[in-house]
Image 1: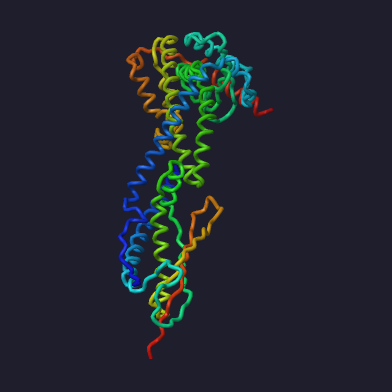
Image 2 (image 1 turned 45 degrees about the vertical axis):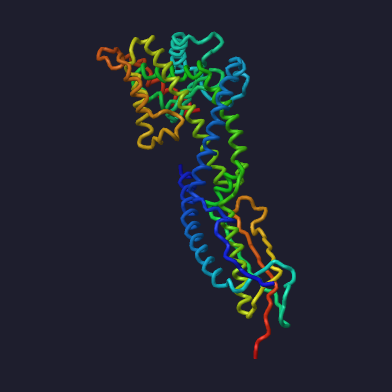
Length: 151
Length: 283
């Protein structure tokens, strides 16, 4: 009985906070993506066209997200039956976009107009510790092109 | 070449479906599968255990068998009552009932493998008449008759194994626990069915011995008092609700007749209990 109550409150807590945080985060992601649309981040290894001699610099954006209990519960059941783990998909999607946004924000501050060779890395923070609620880091990095200042 | 940064539509890398919908589907699906799995295993175990000869039960070592006393006026009186009930329940010859008396406060009685039936002092000293005692004893002997001890042992082993596999596969202690508990509640349902079956057989035996059911409900009234307000919801319990069991007895019209003659316990019954208790206390 007590177990069930603890379990259900963990689920409710995870759902309530997790859902609220996710909605809020998506809103902010979409808003900032619009704002930074003028600064493309592309995957090509070299920019094809550079009109003037420019400076290039490494830009990095990193995010660590943690899964909530509700998402974890769904993923555990998915472990038994298989299929898309949609509860994790939205989490990782947010982390990836947030990492790109942070990278872009850094490039913007440097006055860049393009980021090329954009790459992603992920690292599981709780790797190998089965009974912990998992966290994952998503790291986005690339080379920012900074045009010469016009004096 | 111009670089552009088009707006990418939402919902490609993440699902637009409401998470609660998935939650409901997954939870009900998984719980239903566990329920069906346990159901199949219980049927499987019940069929197989009926092929185990009763004599095998005696070979399974069970530590508590040595705990009770078989000598003294109480066990002898209990045994003589048991023999009458055995006769009226038509137990096969090989099913020998052995009565054990435990000098302990616990308000309980139980039947286990090999036809061993245990009575605790705590319950016996609360019983007001022989009819209530006979109801209790007929209930426990009915468990033996229907092979319930070996069936529930088999269910416990097989279903317990299946549930532990499921809960460790889950990989999360609390969630695994939850799935295990859900399966366990399914087993309890079958445990309650056994109790009802034993009640039914016991009621028939009492009717044939005393001709009525008067006094039989006293047993459940005592059990109800003992549980107090702590009686858990039926869903979480090994036994059916005592109110339902009292109602079951009272549903027979010959239970509530005013002229039912209630057989008292032997005059010396309470004395025997205190004597046995002081003797064992002095040891």
